Each structure stands twice: as structure tokens, then as C-alpha cells.
Amino acid sequence: MAKRDVIVVGVIGAAMLAIVAYVAWAGAQKRAQQRHVRELVVDTTEKLRQVLVAKTAPDLAPALDANLSAAKAPRDPKLADAAEHYILGAREIARRRTAAERYSRQAAASRHALAAHMASASQRGTGWLNQALALKKRVEDDHFNIGVELKALDELLFSMSDAEQRLAPHVGREILVEESLFTAARKQAQDDLRRSADDLEGARRLNIR
Image 1 (cartoon, rainbow, N blue to C red):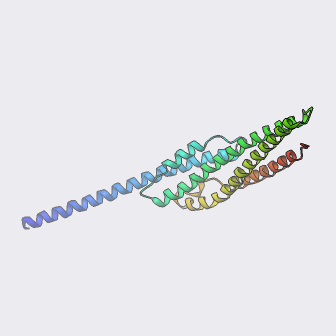
Image 2 (image 1 turned 90 degrees about the vertical axis):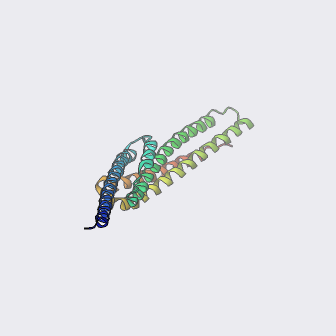
Image 3 (image 1 turned 180 degrees about the horizontal axis):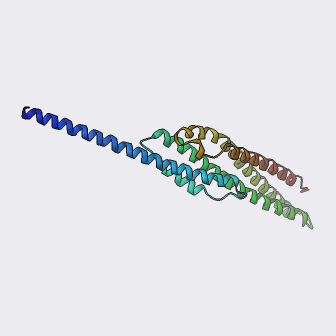
């Protein structure tokens, strides 16, 4: 074999080895990214379950936001996209539930302040009336905010079914939140919304004049 032919064969062989090495490296990198994203999904599911079942919602939105930022898999963009939708939904559910509870506490305090103001009036003058109107507005604002958060929460819980359907083929259905928890959480949000409306109606019936 001529010297030139030997060089050509050597170059081709080296190129083939480089290609094989790159394919192996890319495959290993892809599997590592897939494992990492799957671990984030498992952690997200655990935290989301806590948010859904706890009587008082834990403040897990920051931790879920960190999971969202870390859910990157350039070697498997379909997995990354599906995981991001799932984690984003979980984060927003955590945020909305925490906000709804905060506004509920504020609304209860506002209603109490209004009732106390109405009951303790010895003389209903202009100052008293202005304060009563301000307290009523605060009650209205708090209950409006409750409604915004609970309606958004209900919609997010409903949409998680689609997010899970997109993600399940990549990670397995068994590591995602079961549908029954979303159903129960939606019912709770709807019950809370009706209760808030009843409380607001009761506050509106307080006689200012």
C-alpha cells in the first residue's frame, strides 16, 4: 500500500473514531440531562402534593421556581419543554394558593374591623360615615382579590391534566400527581370562592345609614 493510501486510511479511521466518541459522549450527556430533569419533576411532584393537601399552603413557590430554572435538557428539548410546563403550573398553583390564603386573612380582618366600627358607633357623623365607607371598600377590595386568585387557581388545577399528558410519555405517569388530588383541590377552591361570596354579601348587608 502506498504511503499516501496509508495516510488516507489513517485519517478516515481517526475521523470515524472521533465520530463514535462524539456520539457516545452526546448520548451520555443526553441521559444525564434526562435524569436531572426527571429528578426535578419528582421533587416538583412532592412539593405540589404538599401544596394541594396541606390545610395551610406552605410557601414552596421559590423552590419550584428554582426547579423551573434548572429544568434544562438541550439534548432532549421535548422533555425539557414538557417538564417546564409542568413545573411552571406547579409554581403558579403554589403562588395562587398562598395569595388566596393571604387575602382571605386580610378579608376576615377587614370584615371584623367593619363590624366593630358599625357596632361601636355612638354618633353617626360625617367622620364615622367616611370611615365606614373606607372600611367597606377595603372589604370589597380584599374579596375581589380573593376571587381573582381562586379563579386563577381553579383554572390552573384544571390545566394540569394537559401538562401531565405531555410529560408522562417522557418520565412515566407514576411520578406525577394523581388526578384525584387536582379534583379535590378544585372542589376546595370552588367552595372557598362561594364562601368568600357569602362573607362579602354579609358585609354588604351591614347598614351604614
